[in-house]
Image 1: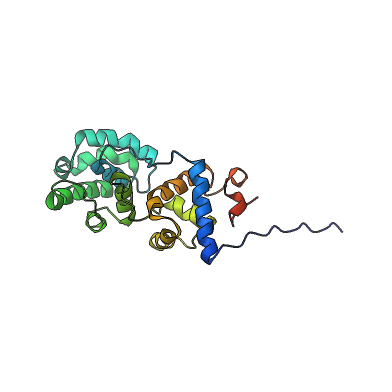
Image 2: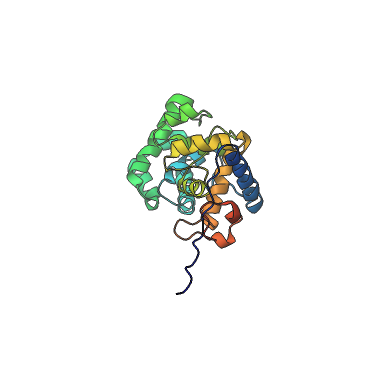
Length: 226
């Protein structure tokens, strides 16, 4: 009878102090692999980034970047957007999906800025999440990329997938994932780590068929298929 093929054994997920060392190795390697990792949304100020991030829900950054130039040419600041006709905003953002809800959130967000913050985007987590259409993930995007503040870690679908595969977290709850990731990385790296995970997820660690043979983390990844 032919010999049975040996079954490959996955690496154990690191725990305790080993987990933090594992995270540091991941950070170092991804920094080297993606030295230009950055926010993929185009923006020139905090208001534009806030609007673009609201539009990015269930939509690609590439598509959002095609829509925002016309949107912000028509409505360049919070005061203009707060007075916008919803049907007009819907027409401008239609291709981003869920355009009616997004238009309502954009106008409500702008009105919130005008009524409570003098038309300016606040550099404060609690103030941001009180705005229509803004949750913790969006607030983290704004604080990290518009204001250079590392108050949290953005957790999107790429970050969720990559961090689970790398054995850093288990589960899909974004809030819980963020709370697990935060103590694993230096605070000054909280913004960049999400960009690194997102870039790695887009280029290598694909949802359906990860390219493990090309991955700089394959030798330390509990989920590697090589």
